[in-house]
Length: 228
Image (tube, rainbow, N blue to C red; front, side, top):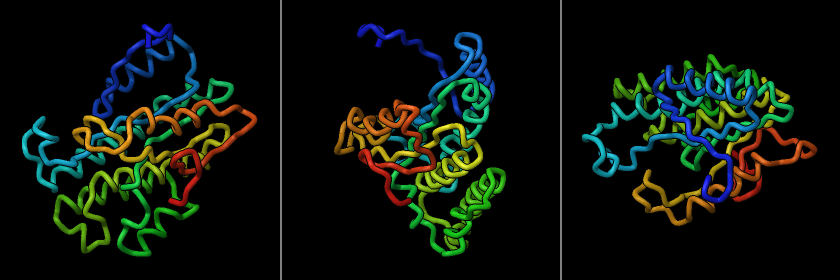
């Protein structure tokens, strides 16, 4: 980015480390005073139990805590830390990168689907449900309790639900989620069928929407709003 003339800087953020999150928040506050756009893209996905040879074999029962802890709770903590800085911006936006893996239909019971789409759902109760999923997976009772057999999918379902709640609770902020498609990245050992550049087009478009085209609470794919 710097080579193309952009005034770009790098700040490491580890979603599993609260000190890292606070350090990033402090850096943005000190250097810029506000935050215009937060794109939540960092995540871990066990497409392979060893992350294609990068870690030791991780059984499904251990994948839940890592996936949900990073993808959902880490994203939530970062967003909450940055929220005061976003509110200092004249036109703040949050773009949450989700996935088709987080579609509502992965939930096995109408009761579960009703819970996650309830207009009265709050962030605290959403967090409790996500923690319950982890607990049930660890105790090998998730299937009988209506949870899916995908930790990554469940973490992204939580992100889409969180997007809807933040849009409701923070009406001055554009908050949307995006399914970027199956992009070829290190996360899937480059098995995806579209490029990361293609996958970034809709998130970038949402991040750069003019203030006159205020859109919030939507879930998008290939430039258009879609059903969850």
